[in-house]
Length: 453
Image (cartoon, rainbow, N blue to C red; front, top):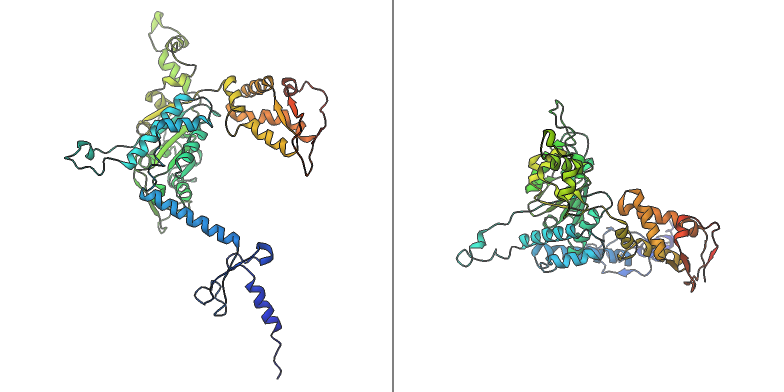
């Protein structure tokens, strides 16, 4: 009986050896492979003993990135990076000024609250004895923040930039999807799951993070009257958030979704997590006006809008500056929920001047983004001052703050981007493309053909 030639087996073995043992991509697709020591223990595919292990560059980079994340997480959890995560409020405001235009009061209030929170975590008095300093036994309570203001004014961006600067885990949750436990929807613990995912699954690192709950005004009580049915997406959610905001050991489902009795949970202590709640609170200014308008009754009663105007002679045009806890209670928030958000700050509507600065000043300004898009096609895009003011005026009429700027710019530059004649070796043109206010308004009849230099 003749033996089969070993050529096919040998060739298949060589072909397998030229593949990455982690992603199974061939050497021709990934480039050179790193060859490891050969042994059955090191062979992740459990093939023939003595076969060497091969790793491609992409898998090696992924492994190094994972190791770096674990090192950073352990350093932050052990407190070795305290100096980097505890800047002064002035440094935080200076960083926010690079990305957010206006809202000075909100930036200062938020910066002070965040700085004090991380001072509380570090607790420089923890190593002092009672005989040396009587403040060593004082425990600093957590101060969560409530951020009130209209849409498109930088609430979410402000919190995201702070978390990026502090290099801490950050998660954004939407309050509109939350429901009371046992009903269709997401449980409040799913917000903590997002924070765990942002921390790479490290509970110690997640406990130093920041959670921003957006659209918090949407869980307000729908009516002040007592109802025979449960408000599972309003007052029920507020009651479910009470312990989490105050500080408790929450059971977080590792895969999200609904809870069930036989499921294993990840315990997470929320005492050290900073919660920032934000919402537009549409109609809250009317509640404030009604409260300020109750000056007298009978024939001497003053109209509601007159006391409000008189009380704001020395204030800005933002009526939310006069907000009080009773106004939030009238809006639909329960007193227990309001009490767990002791720091209340407001953002005001953006005017035309602020919108002009948003278009041009920040590092990631919208006009700079479109200038980069046109430069890739060899066209230098230039905006006149009148054009910038026209864009801001049109966005102001939309009534959605800075969110409308991209819509206005896209509408104005859409026809010019269609006429772009890009080339492979496109270089910026010396003449460029000047954008005027007439072109923004669409008064220029014929769109010129734009060619790269």
